[in-house]
Image (cartoon, rainbow, N blue to C red; front, side, top):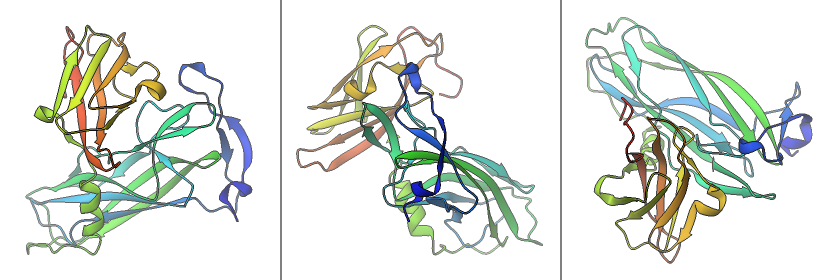
Length: 284
């Protein structure tokens, strides 16, 4: 049975900028199954005091369904993760793999994930971590999954790792995490030329022989004017018109991706650049 047949229409999601909504938010019934399942995975089968390890929040998303990247989306929001960690353990910020553009009828643009998607974060164990008991990591995950309609979901997930002084071994899930790490955009640096034309227009040129480029604007950055039409371009560069009214700490933030003439991705780069004449934020 199609997942959407189990739901009843509950409300209509507002869209950025007040555009008439085209996607309904649905209320799950008591017996429906989520289109996405979630679990915690680790790169290693144990953790040593003072060591680091990659942790993943893995989504397995049913065909024709999707979840969202934290971009300037018209119809959806990205997953959130609330950690419950034992003493002696910290987990860094989530590393998001590159999304792709998804256009619905009515010119609704979102930046989404489909299929298996893994959000990655780095776990750090304290040097004084005791090895008497294993570590149990817990997280509450909330997300919005969408097909023709959207359903808010939540799940409590956990992962237990032994604490050992021996060198940890790669876990069976290590290849899944490593494949996701390969999809996380690197810093633009010298790989992308950024040319500002005042504070409301910028041209991005990747240092590759691109036939097509796209920019995925982050929800945390300055707004791109009409990203549906201006967020993708044929040729070796893209020029973005901006709504440069974000204040003294406004940043251009997002992901630039490029493809060759055969449609093969040439790479993706994280863009994090202050508008001319503005003050970079403390976390840059």
